[in-house]
Length: 167
Length: 167
Image 1 (cartoon, each protein chain N blue to C red):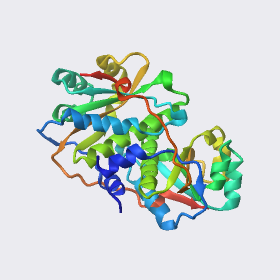
Image 2 (image 1 turned 45 degrees about the vertical axis):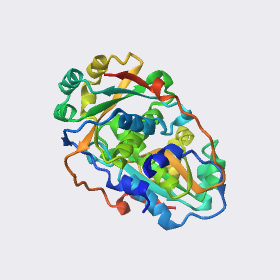
Image 3 (image 1 turned 90 degrees about the vertical axis):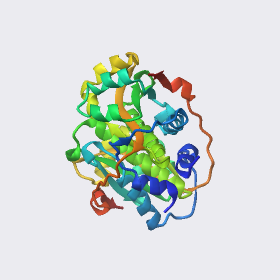
Image 4 (image 1 turned 180 degrees about the vertical axis):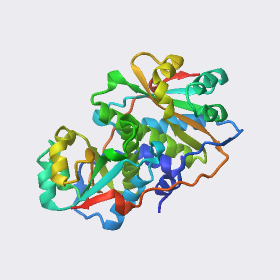
């Protein structure tokens, strides 16, 4: 098994972080990984907000039942769908999922912990206003990152139940 | 830069393949990588069909203007959305994008070439019937894979244009 596949298989959602800061250079390398995701027509419909400020995180945390994670992590990346760049919502949103996965893998490969927060989308308009990202952008996810303080276990459906056909 | 980030940044869509076969063990390792993607509530709404059969590939190729890629590759993976497993279409579809990206990265990390085909979704119902994957499943993408016979160049939007805010 090579290192990339090892990262893919060992990455887990980390929700508990130790107090150390994540340096800007590491955040940059994670955003860079997101930037290189594939997209239909190479339209790259993803945009990012990096959130470190305590007051902003408190406001964001108030919009989700997982606010504790937003408060305890070192930094968040809000991932937004830039609708004017879009050409097909399903395909655009899949590519944003690919972009998020690149960032989660890049974080894990650097020894960081991260979790993909989606529940906040129940209040995505309020979150969008708070971030002041503009009417063109729709919030798709928040990634919370930090140095991990847990080693979570997680399971997956066996492959034989996922492969419907071999043709 | 570690190997995972290097794979993320160097992966490109490969559409030209040399004639060599992809062994089953490699296909298996790619599906395994897909299986470990994150999903909301860990609902894992992805299902797969592996397509090698020449006649099936000819039928599938007839449904897209990129059929030449389906015919010239060594194997295809059809990625389907298992709707009964879904809980939120946007989040489910993003997680399927993460699953696809895991497979593309796994392929690249093994020296293979692969491309994410989306145009076939214009005829996804016909493709679904052809694969006989059942009414519960909606086609989301076809991944064509093989040994690469090109080294494509591709560009991305500069990071400073993607990061809207640093808060």
